[in-house]
Amino acid sequence: QVLLVESGGGLVQAGGSLRLSCAASGRTFSNYRMGWFRQAPGKEREFVASISWSDVITYYADSVKGRFTISRDNAKNTVYLQMNSLKPEDTAVYYCASRTLSGNEYADWGQGTQVTVYS
Image (cartoon, rainbow, N blue to C red):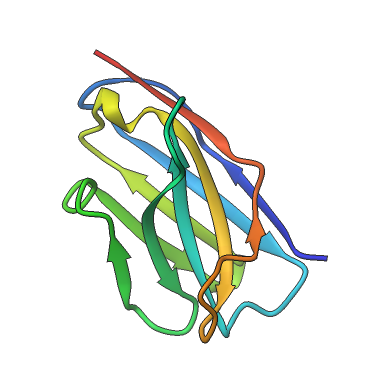
């Protein structure tokens, strides 16, 4: 059974930083891509960033480029999202998800972690 567990959310002042973690278990993730998504109240879930376990290719939403960095620790089966220069509009529940490299949809999701940025 695949399990994705996010942690690291919290309350932070605008301009501050947080690092989210996603601990993955239940399968070998070498052929999977890991993504971070977020959903703010009253809004649709949106893509934030993604990375594969086997290479260093990363993708970011335009709204977070230059502020957020996605990375992974293969030995720990953990994916991170370093968030700097946070803005109130970054407030959302952040979710970790995985999909196969050849797939189009993220099939496995974590429970989410709340990030609240106040001005």
